Image (cartoon, rainbow, N blue to C red; front, side, top):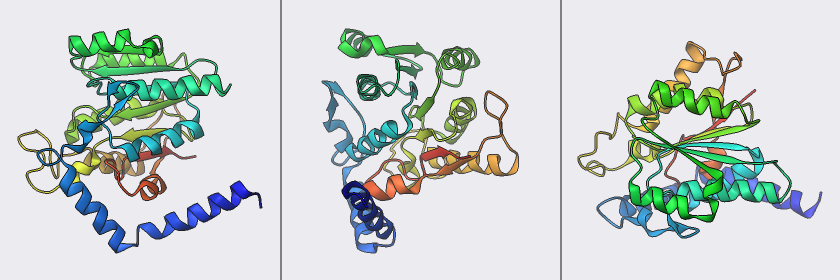
Length: 263
């Protein structure tokens, strides 16, 4: 066994104990109860390459590992906000290119409204050449058709859904964009933690417990099991929750949201 193989074996062994470690899980739950909106507002503390990124750092580590593993040449993101997540994924694709893992990568960012100052900042960034912005509802038929036409030009697609967090909207996004994901790649659904958040955490937002990205994930997986769905090439799809991702990082905003397309 090589040193790297031993490292990974020991790592897997540790991770396998985390889900059943009640003290660790309680600590993580307590942490999330304190960092939320209206309390510490923790998620608003970070930037990526100078651009605000509204992500929990542990999830970015998991995304980095997934991107290196999958080696996508196209990453589709719903929800742009300041644009930091676009910069993160674009920088990861640039690294894949520099390492000779892909030929040329692109990120597509979709949002109902991209504020002018955010659009200007994205356009002025050195990574702007790798980013295509699509303004409109991510579930609008015209937008879906436009993105699918772009995806048809690439070999390996990864999807990140992080826009409007209601059950119906996220479920419609899954129906629209998960069929672009190939076997072994991922569809990542953000802010599934909403389903587990304390009462009142979401304020007057239209989403909350029982009406969240996580309930949409559960329903979509149920549909795949009982009704079946096909990808853009007509192949039957099966997705599974990659619990290993969330178990590894312990602190995640996306429990049950790391969906890997299985054989």
